[in-house]
Length: 100
Image 1 (cartoon, rainbow, N blue to C red):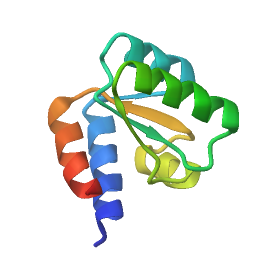
Image 2 (spheres, rainbow, N blue to C red; image 1 turned 120 degrees about the vertical axis):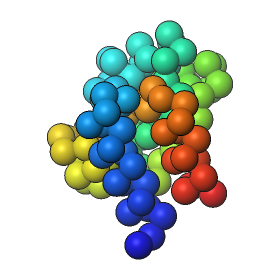
Image 3 (cartoon, one colour; image 1 turned 30 degrees about the vertical axis):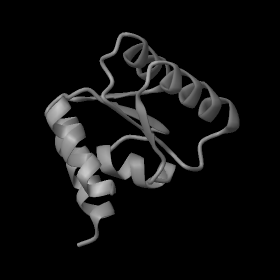
Image 4 (cartoon, rainbow, N blue to C red; image 1 turned 90 degrees about the vertical axis):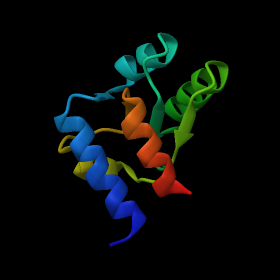
């Protein structure tokens, strides 16, 4: 199993544990309130969304990962999403180790 598959499973687990915030507005809010520990942005997300999320994340010093496509992100959490924020430190640490 690839690290990407493990990462995808971990995202699903985090989602079921209630540790994932999804949807543009909510993710931006999570970044601003320092709730987001790690942000996943679909690599095929639109230019506006990409700019908005990366600018906000840079400003608040939050890592943004673009390892997944919209399809892969959506499959991982079971609903159609282009951007997700992981709010749990434990989950985000584990995810970072899979991305290295």
